[in-house]
Amino acid sequence: MVDSASEDLARQRELLSTTLKLIRGLRRMSAREVADAMGMKLRTYYSFEAGQGPLDIAKIYRFAVATDSDPAGIMDTLQLGDPAYALRCMDNKAASIQLASFRRFNDRVGDRMTNIGPSIWIEAFKRPFDSAEEYLEKRDQSTERWLEENLPKILPPDKPEPAERTRPEGPGARSVSDPPRDRQDGSGAPGPSAPAGRRPRQT
Image (cartoon, rainbow, N blue to C red):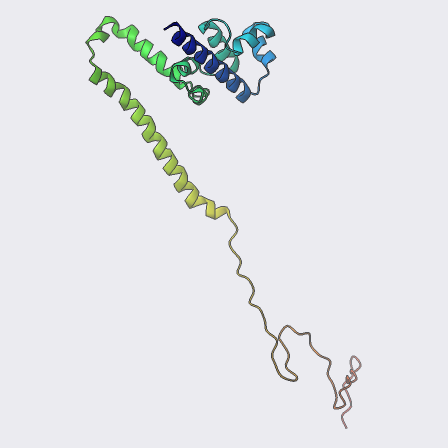
């Protein structure tokens, strides 16, 4: 039993360390910047980021404030075993919003919460998550439809390739694209050009 608890603790420390490093990397912050924002020495911060020492919720919260991330998302990661959960909650604070909403409900109903059965809880939690998933599906479909309708309007139209012109066969044949030939007399030599303003004399 002791070995199992030690293994769980080591796994949680590793998860915490991985999560903290990923968040700091995504925020493009140095260890010193985070340490200064948390008000601790750099050496102490490195120990915290490595997952050393007892689990300190207060430090996790201070880290979340320093990196503008979700403290509840970091804590949930230790139970879910997936650092990606904390990363998905970084900007939208989904885990903290959920926890704050439940805390507000707990403060309002108090001991009456014990009168709520499991089926009611399942439906109560299932409904908002289904609604959020439906929103994502509609958003994705709307985005795809918008791109299909509007993206072609900004693209240049395809220009048809010009038809290839073939040279006519036979003596004296001339293609439309050939340059005009000089006027020739019977000998085949180019004929004289008439001076400008005078008509050639006829014989």
